[in-house]
Image (tube, rainbow, N blue to C red):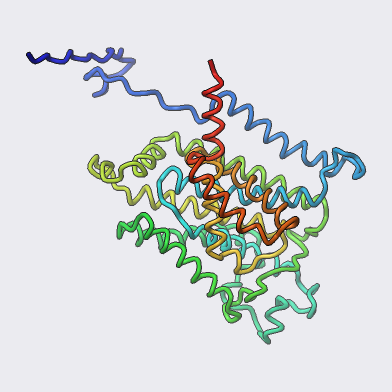
Length: 392
């Protein structure tokens, strides 16, 4: 004897002003749009903003060096560098965690932004270099008589800001268009991005390209006419980096909770069904790919004046793999997870490369294996799981 299933009736929707929509006529109730952040999230965001903009400068510039609360210049530089890495990890999460595209070439975008800023900083040295020439020292050493064409606007800070965004974005746009149009995905896309980064590294190693060869750019002295080595300038760069990280995080939250973000997650989970539903994944994938690349370029530009050097080693495939590890350790598709992962991994790296440098790569490999086997959702996923167990 067959039993007919009972019909399910959706709750009726009361129309507001104006004509009713198609959803109201059929009686369907759409889920509400998720909030960008919860109340707790906004509280944590404001606290982080206060720490970056007020507490850290106070502890570094006002509290005496002998005090236990003093934040040293070394700590300021280290935390600033980690925040730059956190921006890159956040960019990786948007493309990998939310769109399902594993890139092993984000180190190149990071380095492109760094080189754009490095060119400006090299021009700011002026005649204070070793050779007392308007040309950068490496060009004088190579007996160059004039600047190459791609250094034309390197003495303009405004033009440098434009290049920091345009150069990584344009490279990502061209590469991504042909890659996504050809429907290259999965491990093949990862290999191609790694090969692209490796090729760029070899190109920048050549002296004739005008990027300093093996040594890259270093010995920076001023930015906007102000000495970089002063505590006030270092703290200014720290605050700008922290605000940029928080701004990108807020932008990422808005992006993934929007319709655009929901389509990205649908592409990650079932791209063929998205195409069947009438969406063209090319535009969505290309847009988030370019956004992610630009974020890496901005991070690289903030990284260079704080670290004091940029060279082709930043484009090494190992660096791009390490970026993926930051996202995996913290927890993909969470935004906050990759930021935490960047701080955890680089904090361990800073300590271990001093205490036992020969074991760092073994530790990094073991960490990635352990996370893959025992923490597939990263640190954030583990915390959420423990929280659910502890709740009544």
